[in-house]
Length: 257
Ligand code: HPA
Image 1 (cartoon, rainbow, N blue to C red):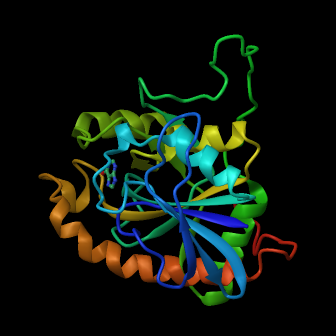
Image 2 (cartoon, rainbow, N blue to C red; image 1 turned 90 degrees about the vertical axis):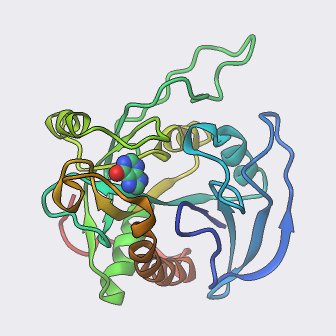
């Protein structure tokens, strides 16, 4: 069963024919909200809004461990994360959809591992390729078959938030090789890996990153809502398509990153 974690702009999944909701208790505290179960295109799926139903949990306070643990507990076998980002790479404009392939983590102080309980053996998990190739392939294929423009490949930076970045921070990130910046991709991705849950992200560019393009003189978050609404229609369509084909083998549409 696929799980979808929705971010800003995706707090419900209209294509989900809801069967029930479940409040899951975890050893790590409360998830962001009740898990919503249902069917999309005849396949079971589960949805969780990362920031809670009232969009009240900021990125640094999301209980990532509880969210991931809860999803695995109810039988999720793969996770698609949907999250909005700021675009740094020159070709990224508001409304673009991106399938990232790498991560740089600039967050601090977040609970970022399941392997830290007393008596837990020291465990180093491989994270060379942070996103699952099969899931990425499914997402790229869905976009391809639907004629949805999805930019395949990108280095995602996770920042601490909730404040946005300075222009100088964005310049430094660009020198680091970052293409897009958000606040929630870590530790979500590594926690999924620690649980052996395939994980991939669809990023929606909400704005040019600080100091770039239309954000040259600042970012007004209120004006981003319309951009997100339109892009999320495409994200929902893609999810519908790929959940329906969850059991089929995937071949990447073209030789891309
Ligand atoms: N920076 C960080 N996170 C974001 C941004 C941004 O510019 N836009 C949407 N999420």
